Image (cartoon, rainbow over all chains, first blue to last red):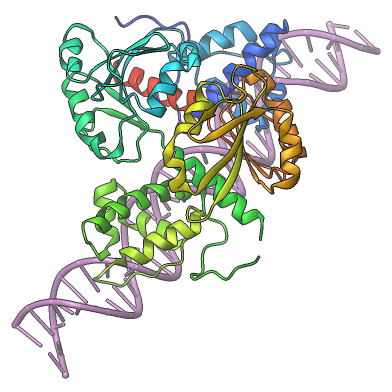
Length: 217
Length: 217
DNA sequence: TTACAATAAAGAAAATTTTCTTTAAATAAT
DNA sequence: ATTATTTAAAGAAAATTTTCTTTATTGTAA
C-alpha cells in the first residue's frame, strides 16, 4: 500500500478543522459547477461565515498551495480535500442494527459521496432479515462473524439499541473492525487502538434546545 | 412565562459541555435503575472516560451541588440535567423533507426522551403527502404557512435536498421558527437571532475516515 | 472527639483553537 | 518597469477549553 500522496498533508489536523472540511468540499463543488476556476480564502470565508485566516489554516492541512491575488485552484483543492478525507476511495463498512436510524443510513444515498459503502447490514430481528434497503441486504447477525473472515472491512456502523451496543461493538472488534461509528447513546469501551466516533443526536439536541432556551429569557 | 428555576444554572455553558451533558444523563439513568442513590464525579469520569474535574465543571452548569465524600444525588442530578437541557418539556417541531433521513427522524422514537415532538412533516412530493410515519402526518409543503399561524412552533428540522435548504429555511423563519436543526450539507444564511444547529453526517465521516487513515500509516 | 480520607468547589496553569498582525509573493494598473 | 493592491503564509496574541492545584467540607474510623 503506502501510496504516495500528491501533497504534503499535515500529519495531525485538529478536529474542528476536520469537521469543517466537508463544508468546504460541498461549497467548492458548487462553485466548480458554476465554472469558477480559482477561489480565494476570503471569498470562501464570506460564504461560509468563517474567518479568512481560519480558512487558510484549514485548507493548509491538505497541502495545497494558493497563490496570492488568485487564490486556490478549485479543481485541485477539491481533489486534495477528497484525498485528505478519504472520500474518493471506497471505504467499506458493515452496519449493525437495521432499526429506524440504521434503515435510514442504509437508504441514505449521500454516503456514496463520502466514499462509504455499506456492504451488508446485520440484525437479530427475524422480520428484518432478508429485507433489502437501499440495495443493502439485511443478514442474520451471526453471519457477521463468517462474512468478516472473507472481507477486510474496517468500519462498523453501530445503530443498535443502546443496551446491546457494548456487546456488539466487541463483536465487531473481534471481526477485525478498526473504527466504529457509534450512533447509540451508550458509551462503548474498547481497546484504545480502535477508533470510536460517537454521533449522538442528543448532543445536538442539547445544544439546540439550550440555545433556544437561553435566547428566550 | 419566566418560570422560576430550582437551581442557579450557568447563564452560558460552553458548547463542549452541552454536548457531553446528554451522555451524563444517559449514564445516570442507567445507574439510577441499578438503585444507586449517590454518585461521585470520579466514578462518573471513570465510566465515561472523562477527567473528574471536567465532570465537576460540566455538572456545575446545572446548578446542582454535590457533597464531598458522597457525590451527587442521582435523582436530583438527572432532573437538573433534564431541566437544564429542556428534555423534560415538550419541544414542538416541524420537519421539512420526508426523504430517507427525514423519515428516519420521524420514526425515531428516542426523540421523545429529548422532549422533541414533531407535530407534522412537510414535503412537496405527491407520493409522500398523506403518508404517516411514526404517527406523524406528511402534509403538503404549502400547508406549512397555514399551520404555523395557529401553532406556536419554534423548532424546524431541515432534511430537504441541499439545493432547497436555504429557501425552505427562509420559509420556516417567516413562519415564526426560531431554531433550525439543519441536517443538510448546505450552509444556510439567516438573521443572526435565528439559531441554526448544523448536523452534517459528513463532518463525522470526515473525522472517522481521517483518523482511520492516520492510524494505518 | 479527633484525626483521616474522599471529594466538590474554586482558582491557576496548560493546552488547544481562533483571531489578529506582519511579511512576502503575485497580479494588475500606471 | 514601477507601484499599488490583493492575498497566502507564517507567526503572535487572544480566547476558549481542559487539566492541574489548592482549599474547604463531609463523612468515617480510631
